[in-house]
Image (tube, rainbow, N blue to C red; front, side):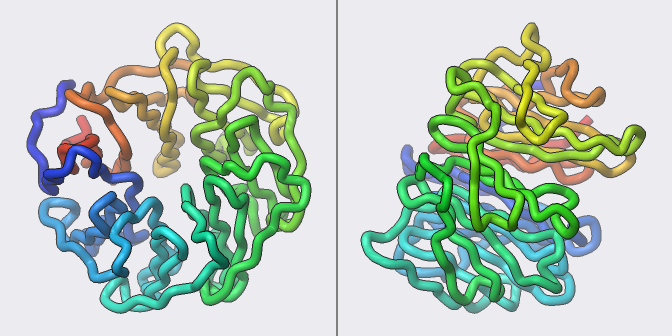
Length: 311
């Protein structure tokens, strides 16, 4: 299916783009979703049909956004901007800033604990300063880089069984790191150095076998998979997923459906990543995606954000 070119959020600057999306856990009921863009953080209350720019900070560039799993109750929302991580306890109406030491870090990703309501834990990845952690709901942050020898962190992911194993993954310019103690210490996995950088990570649990799988998108080797916490790897769907995989999304509702974003397409797999089919072809450079039930939010460099039907 080709994109129809209808943008519900138009961006006029050639340098502007949606970098990340996040949606309320109760999206099917409340329609709340967020878009982190070069021009700021936007919010939609109608499933992405219309967007409002939120008053976050003087520095508009927003590179990551994340919601509490208990967002419907605590309204906790986090946005990464240059030099800090903003937090809101009312869904984005008002904000508080957690400062970081100079020079200000450039953030690439945020990861919120699945048990955030109890532990208040988050990780933030940066492009030159490694990983920061917070255990007080984003009020204060500490660098946790012991064993992390590459501080250019491109992506983060937490294990689906975080409450039991405290396992986190960090993709960097030179490979993939794993922490088994909540991010306090890291070690390099068996991810082959020649496949780096690791651009995106997805963790999933097969509902039938209950086995955990780790998926990593690469720049020139498509999609890699590991079933042993990153020690050994195999390439998936080399024939029809040969481009750089820039984002991954796991939809575990009613089974496991995977989505992968390349520079000009969104692809879908219904068999755990063994085979893929084109879902959307984009005229331009795709920068972010988020499947939400029967719709897809898709960002395109210098153009804006589309809301497309998933068929």
